[in-house]
Length: 323
Image 1 (cartoon, rainbow, N blue to C red):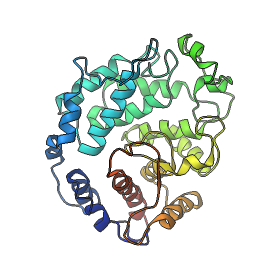
Image 2 (cartoon, rainbow, N blue to C red; image 1 turned 135 degrees about the horizontal axis):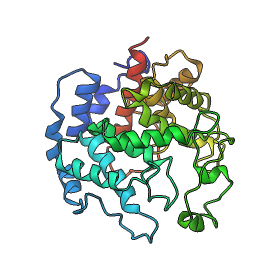
Image 3 (tube, helix red, strand yellow; image 1 turned 90 degrees about the vertical axis):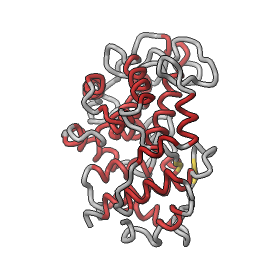
Image 4 (cartoon, rainbow, N blue to C red; image 1 turned 60 degrees about the vertical axis):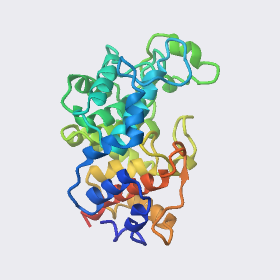
């Protein structure tokens, strides 16, 4: 439990959500009970999401985007994240099998899952798709191996990652429409890493039992840890305020996603950078066990604050074990 790292016990507040999925994961992940999460597959929202799946395995983005953009891949990313992250779906479910096949069909020859940035590689969304599919049971799939090799092949000289177009000073406003239709841009490896991008890439490594042990993952973790609370080197989510804007399932790099990754990499709670992050969450905890946080997206879920609270507890538990 996380009692030693927080002011108040969050479990009663989490269970007060009266949400079957949250309660199941609290019992499994925080209380150590044996829970059959496959029963969550039959919950109404999960069933509604499955029914929206298209015949090709994707989920359709609400607004049509012209080629070369493929925002159905973006909608599929979000929906798979909810099914796996909130309802415990895995590769045993046909919807996940079809969704995974669709994602794999979007893999570019270089190895990334392409379309959300048009013809340009996505060092942001590709590792999020990898993270979700690895957690669903696809850690040994050849497509995941190819995606990892692409990440390894496109590292910057300092050991981190950035959006390649950004390393050449290409802006979204005014520049990006032409860039999206152009040939893929290789990164300028001499430029500094983006902590936003590196944090997202690291999440694919930390959920994989073999790649998590690679030196490249440890190096990336040290880079990310060194940038907590600092502005990014690039314009995307540059401000310090983005460290403390949260959502669940995870998308962009923030303080919570970073703690979740660093906890999987065996850093200790008394590390100065990590201690500062844990202290921040501690200060934001309320007397009832909840957290006073800014939620960035997904606020249509009335239980989003509880999901984020559960994610905080999961992350802190990894540090509590090593105290």
